[in-house]
Length: 373
Image 1 (cartoon, helix red, strand yellow):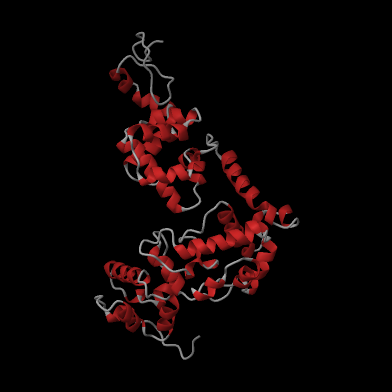
Image 2 (image 1 turned 90 degrees about the vertical axis):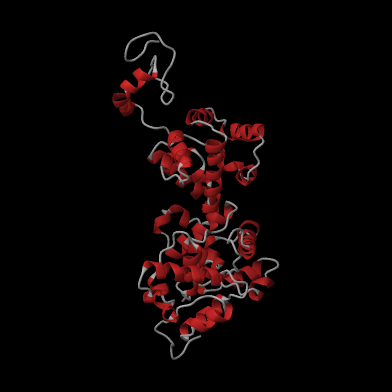
């Protein structure tokens, strides 16, 4: 082959597209302005850039081709990113290597070989050994066709639990309550539990589970997920049956009726609110305090003192205080709710965090109410 610029014989080529030949770095740089139009970055190039910057990929092709789309929970996406960061920034794998592995259908195998040969045993790699499925069946992203295939794959997982009538209509046309249940079924059937930043984390009772210091792998959340797994997979609960319980506010009764070992639900104060049933804003506060990207909603703003914040720094301090409070072993969201509606948030916080530096005016709200439950 000959150089694209000076026409000298050469065997060197652009490592990205492998189609344009150059005899030297000088000729390659000279052709860069023209060639970059015909040589857009591969998904692997974007992945490497993200890894070097410690950023979660947002490019749909990267998410699709490198397994992120197969991670149902944010925590798993973070672990997968950590795996790639180690591969790229510590071990030193290049975009061309990673692209070649992916192109040949050897990504999972080569990652294991690379980590094993180098003697690397990070927590991310240990996670990967238990979750290799996220890198199985990877294909090139092809726009709408690929997006539709993802939707079809997810739909096929939940479809058997829909009634024959519901299977004949688009998911979008189903009632909102069934939309939420569909999302829950999808997550449970793929072996996961709802992420704290998802609405269904509140809808189906995970918000009432006790919190640990790091909010990773909550024991009660796992147990609740296992109950839903038993209800759906082993007992074959249909979406119609679940919807009846959800709309009537009797999901916990449904679990107790069909599943084994449910006595801990009442003991631990686990609740599943019915569809459209009143939900104390304390659970939204919990989601806001512990989640990374949950917005401050109007009920939290009014009920828990954020309306009193004069600066962003005060808002940050108040959020940090609530995070610390919620992670305390003695914290009970029901007690904080009662303190909220009786106008005694300051007293409650002081009882749990006696050494915390508090600004009383930040913990005032519009209450007490004349009557509350």
